[in-house]
Image (tube, rainbow, N blue to C red; front, side, top):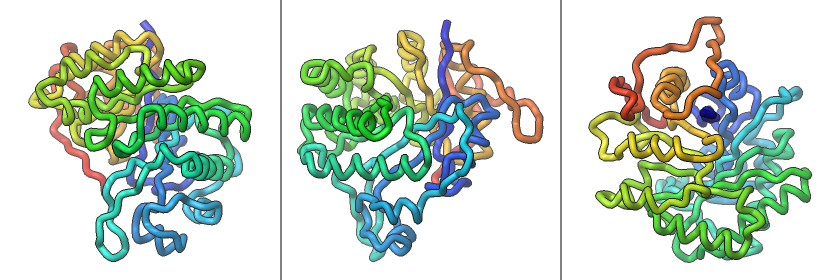
Length: 326
C-alpha cells in the first residue's frame, strides 16, 4: 500500500515569511515531501509599518522583497506548498478587527491575487507544487471559485511553464464548510472546467468539517467526493487529536486509506520542537504506510518513536502536549 507525503507546516520559530531553504533544512531530514510557505496579505502591525500597505492588502513587489528572503542555491528536490490568505480576523494597528475580503467573483481582483503569488514565487526562485486557497464569504459562488482556480493554473503555465495543484481548503465560517457544499463545489468544477479536475481538489480539514456539521459529521464526511481529496490537515482546533475528541479519527483515517492517490498530510503544529514527535505519531496511526522514509535529526539521532498523538483504531496512546500559535 502506498504511503503518504507529509507537509512540514509553517512553524513559529522560523522567519514568518522568510525563504525556502531554512524550512527545507528542517523538513528534509525528517522525510517530509513539502514545506509550507505563507502567502497571506498584509497581516499585522509590523508588516504595515515595514511595507506602508494597509492590513489586508494584496502584497506588491516591493513588499514581497521586504518580507521574504531569497536563497542563492536551492536543492533540486525542494517542493513547497503556498498557503494563501485564509481570511481570518486580524487586528489593525489601531486594534480594530479586520478581515480580508476574498473576491473570487471579481476577475480583476483574481488577476491581482494571481500577480501577488507570481511575484512571491519569482522572488523565492521556484514555483510551488501546491497552492491552497480559501472560499471566502457567500458572495463567491462555486462557479466563481472554480473560474479563479482555472485562472491561477493558467497564469502559472504562462509564467513558469508549470501547472500547480490548486486546492480549496474549506472553513467552518466560510461559504464552503460542509460535506454537501464540498460535493456541490466539486460537481461545479467538473461541469464547467473538467479539464482541471486533475489539477485541483480539496484540502480536507476534519476539525473544521466537524465544527460545521457537528453531530452530522459522519454523514457530512461521507458526502465529500473521494476523487476530490488531495490533502488532509490533521489537528483538533490546533491541538493534537486525542481519544476524547468529538472528531471520530478512525473514520477520518479510514477515508485517507481509501484515497486512490498518494495523500498529502499536514500535521498542524506550530512549535518546531514538537513537530518530529507529531510526524512520527501521524506515520504510526495512518493506515497508509510504506512510502515515507524515516529521517534523522540534525544532530544525527533518530527521530523519536514514542508518545503517539494521533488516535485511530491502530493507535491507543496519546501525549498531552498542546500547541498554540505565538
